[in-house]
Length: 205
Image (tube, rainbow, N blue to C red; front, side, top):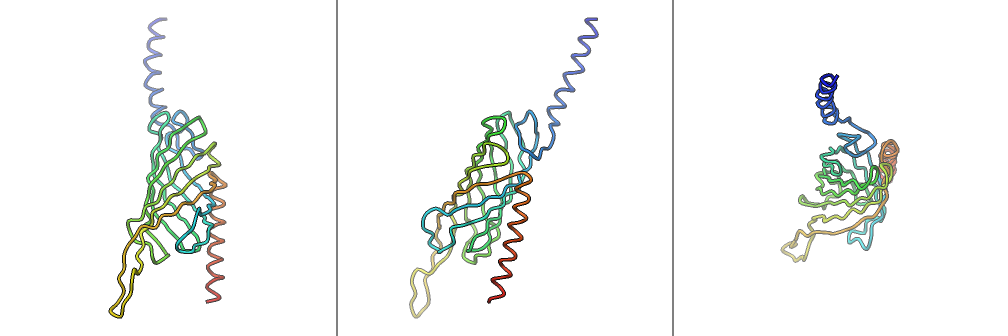
């Protein structure tokens, strides 16, 4: 009987380890005990804080989709692609993300990235975007998005031409994000609304 018990334990050990290593892909983010990898489908509405030198509208919408891997019981790393839209135009680029699980559902995220696509016409390569995000649950989060955007402008002009300089343009946005299926739905609605607005504006040009 003892031999049977020992054999059962020996067989059960590798099975348990294998099950932990093969933790499932999750749509609703959870720590490592329940998820190996989880998806991000976030959509947020943001308000620009302070004065904007470009005269941009204070409202922004941000879609942020990606995936993260739980590398420990309280730590996850991954990446995402963000798209942010305001009156100045569209920014699109990748971000590297880190998550610290505070509880089984609450988490703190930080991220850093750079826009690779810009429709504003005055944002240069080398711009930096950031994210600090606290979520009490996978469906809701409160976030801050600091940015240092490089742009080139004329410093002074003379009959011979204009002297230009490239500077960093800092700005900060605070907002609320939703995730999961609502994040997918609002991303689609936001994209459709933005396209219709673009068509409306274009019709008056």
